[in-house]
Length: 466
Ligand code: GUN
Ligand code: ZN
Image (tube, rainbow, N blue to C red):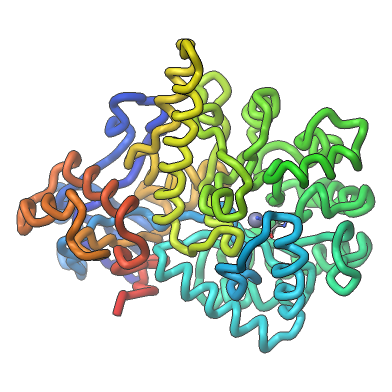
């Protein structure tokens, strides 16, 4: 048994800041001088250093100074095999898939190509402070084997699965429903619960699935009810029209997934830009989650996700935030927060443009604003709850896995931003929660993965910035 401890400034969340509008800090737990005690990768004690240290005399302590330590970031929606299409020019979703994505993902059928891309993918996750990601792969067995092998080697808490498509796709890249079912089953039996891997049944999207492919997903979920389901929903108007044309018995996009019995706890629909109020309500009632991917929604011109509506306390939708790399043009969830803030502000411009905003509009407009507490909750505890892994990761509760990130609030672009004066003023001082909150907002709006100094996985240092 190995016991170690980390001393530093810790922030995590014990509640949902959207429930504390105007006093979001009430959802946070802050220790300016804290101690995290870890045994074999699991948190066994946590609190103020002065209180915790005397209980663990003799334990080896690593001090992390001048950093803010947060639970490892959770990316609710990312694509393994798009690592090499970051920054592809000029298309919206459907032509972008055809022109850039399918040809590149197809190359992952080759083991050597997949191994190299997969190593790059995981290196970038860790350099971004991301310790968990719900990941789309491809429909190819080898690609999926490589993904799970590498995740196991890195000992990371990952969710993923064979990503099936058999409609609106070139023949060379299409699954058959039978092969999708058989290969998914092979992977489930081998990898679900092996190491820290969790398996997601993954129909790529409604526009790319035949009824037979959906039926295969439904059968797998019936056989393995404990599994996750990961897909896309209501991302782009052309996609949505295409889906509804295929399913004239469904009123809306969510109805298609409902028809095949896929919607409920552990279901995540990526994007949800164009979801109706009624669809949001059904997400909320069923315990299903949306992955909000603002960088992608801006980059591919998909639209503005209604964050304030999704977080309506009457029908609160479980939310993770996702990079959607390479639909999103960054690996770093700090950039995702930046774009999420801007999407919220743009939504408020539209609301404020109405002639007499109603009470509801004002409350929704307040919820559209991504305060630093809401932002970092979403990358940690909020993401974990939406993925139903909050018993494992997401904050520093005793019994959880010790994945965390140390942010350097002095790193980033040259000192042009107002928050840099705070850094100078507070140099060498014990930080307050107000100061940490301001620094975190500065990091998410002005910095990027340069702020990620160290990333720890199961109590072990997995990444250190050069
Ligand atoms: N819908 C189906 N496949 C994809 C994909 O790879 N990226 C995005 N953003 N949307 C999708
Ligand atoms: Zn995606």
